Image 1: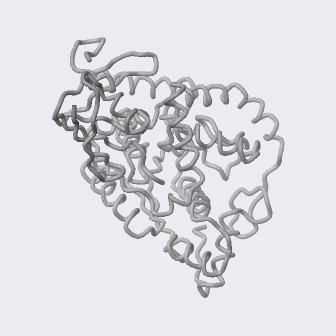
Image 2: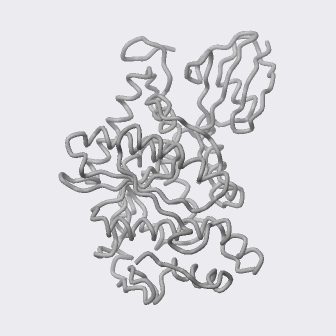
Image 3: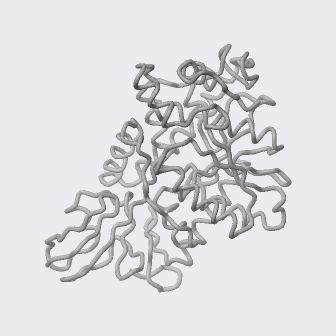
Length: 68
Length: 317
């Protein structure tokens, strides 16, 4: 299944191919992003890494790091 | 995933596996901060607290939290901000802070490197690069900012300076100092900084010490603090960035590694403080601030940059 993801730190949107029944944590593993670096947001609300994903979902990964 | 306290949708899973909705996350976070303040004696009754604000999420969230916590003693709290002169970065960040303080009627004391030292950080970095002075931007910024905040905290009569440093910041600093072999700098860390008691120093305290950067960011979002993620242009030259990314990668493989690093460090901190507290502290012959050497690090930087500016340097004393 395909999921659209906006990575705030990189200011870019990607379409990621994931296995069926994947969760946010699988998306992070695929993107090689540490869970401690981002806040996942789906449909405008903060969700956990255990949030299930389905075909066509749109996810934002807000960056938690602030520089300096 | 549901909150384990109320069945609402969870926004966070703690290291111990607790899933929490926004309301219970805020409770969990604030309880942790209050416990840190009490257990480590960060703020005593009646103390005057100056919150060092960068305009970033951590310090703004801390200011917001302490402003609410001290609602019956608001004459004892104020904010301080330093504009180092980083074009396109600090000016943007401080605009948000000024608005936040105005909306909440929080007194904000704002100073700049330009007024105090005669140059902006951008100018100092340019001079350093063009003349091969080999002073790194983060070193200039950190030393001058700390010196300025200490000077004004003392002058304005505050007993503590509260900073928004979190567990990630502390884990990074501990590892950086270990790897560089700086045990005396390690001794200055902890929820309450400093190893030497001196009238010239205003102690710095870190109420968010046991909160992760992610927890800080979620708390900031949930309490309505606008979080922008503009990164400092000098950040890319920073050793801390490498350590931060390394620790985050390690934390994905070994969850809780940053907590372990900080907690284990706190076990040896009393020994480090004892070892390094005996060293006496003098006064800087230029500005009069406490200094281990004849001239403090802030004045050493100013002395190096100044000849390329043509004078007019005010050390803020």
